[in-house]
Image 1 (cartoon, rainbow, N blue to C red):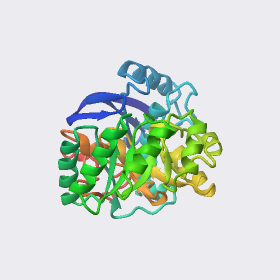
Image 2: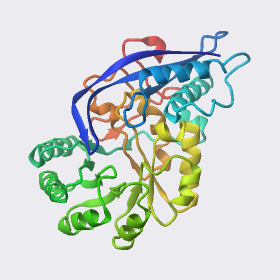
Image 3: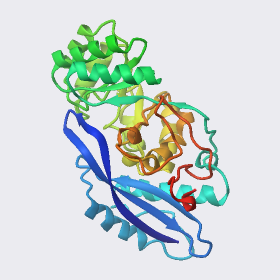
Length: 342
């Protein structure tokens, strides 16, 4: 099995701001595994991330280490432990794509899962002035989005203003609030009190991962579901989150790929936790593996490709609030200008 890759730049339609960073573009590395004997191949994607400490140089260095393991007769069953989960995830996505394509089935079927014709997704609003976020929310509601994820920062007053403006502009739309660890328990309780009556359905990682006392206090004082995101990477984290989280946000870039994400989702369900599937800002190729797991999730926060100025891949849709997987073998995405990618 031969492992190759190429690098491209993904420009965002507009700068995207969360509590710890602003981004206008990122680089994507497309990973391809190919069977030299048959020419059959599969693809995956990993994107650069300042937060995760991933740049192109590190990604390529780690892919060379993986490539050294991809000799005859086929794909290795393991990837070196030092390889970053996001890099490993791209390789395993390519492997799953290859295996499913060879068998003329979707990756969901390869995993023993159904693949819905329509998958409702949330859309993320980056931090901005309340009136600007409200205008964007109104447009997204008009297009069909029924769930919005609202990014916010440590300022409780501005957080409430953003939520109130969005709720007024997009009536009937539910809101998940995501401060990306920027709040304390006191801030969270203040925002919840001042936004009482607004359609907030969950808080995602409001407090820093290691503030377990604050998370316990918050959970004891609200019935609103708490979603763990930055706190979830592997199976061991699920046990540590017992009593601290109602929902876990599973991202393939954190846990090491589609096979581990599948196992993590099943294990979360067995522990009484619901699942959100998340992604980074990436192309449809980066989102597609998580979409194949959608039957296991309560919420699918799979809009990373919708934030781009131009998505080089097609086959997912989502502009109207629903992914519509193509149903093609493998991950089901393809380059519109390249028949060989289908």
